[in-house]
Image 1 (cartoon, helix red, strand yellow):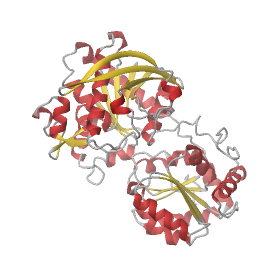
Image 2 (spheres, one colour):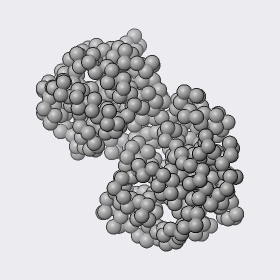
Image 3 (cartoon, helix red, strand yellow):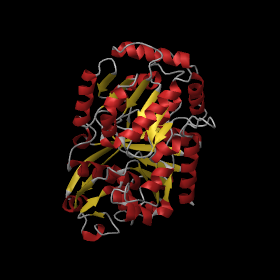
Length: 478
């Protein structure tokens, strides 16, 4: 079984969010099951030089975008036992940032999709993958082009496609005129059954319409996106393809996220709350916060956007800061929320610390130091932070949506079951009620130890999910 992953980011090469974690770790789990996976990725300027310098040239060819012929180089390298095929074009990918280039994004990722397909055409029949697994809108044109522009290649007719939605909110919507030019297409692709989207064209919809099978990253999110509330105007398409849609829960790389071996921690631990709390003392010193093992610490590692519930956190801050807690936040995003947190840090010295940007080592120290992890997302396709927090024996407080609902079981004091705390309505009132409930159990050492132990019973690695993906691939390859 040969599978190509086509994606716009993957750890440890380049990362902006959870997509990179999935594309970086799932192939390892599939390889352990005997699946031969190659990850195809743009050769960004942000990829570390020690990785790109070790890449071996494999092929050079032109990619046509409309009337233009663009250079494309393919380079191969092995990273952590995973084969990567890097798509090289410095004009498109040697830039300061991964994303955020307006309409140029259409050209950049149309080029990438064409490059993947041209690379397939140039392979020998025995080298062709059985499956091309596409991830998010940046690769949504691959299933469409395979079924249309490249359908006359006999060798490619046996190649099947899987399209995974990691976040339906980001859809790659561009004008029809731009997409027609890039794809050398007429109106035939811009119909209700094609990629037409309210007068424009959607790369996400192209993937949803033309891929053989669809997946998303949790069972609950697979149900939610078929509704008006969460469907981002594509719920009708998703309901039509409900029989081809599966929700497969993401996992985490448990070898990497391991508090027993994590080099970023002050004190390594597994189940010892006493050792874990020494990491809290170290972080309090690092941030200049009052030191005390008994002070409840709430951690947040997130993009600072409304999707993650920062409007709810903002509304709740005065009440939250009135509690005997410390709040530590790591992230970047919406300037409004960054400003809100800067102001709150100055108004509540010794209670709130915010670090803007991203720092992998600091993120892990926050996971290890925090007693509770706050994640009140308005929607959450899967979420990895709550899984990492459970791995670091930190109790998650989440809103009941998407993958958060699938992975965080609210604590039941009568049965002793549950690994965290959750609330339903997206309101600051419900958020604070749940935080106060968690704090009450935190003060009960026996109950808290039970909740932490419950969270340690499952590791949320990739084994089960990799098995589900392998089954899906084999269904298609028959």
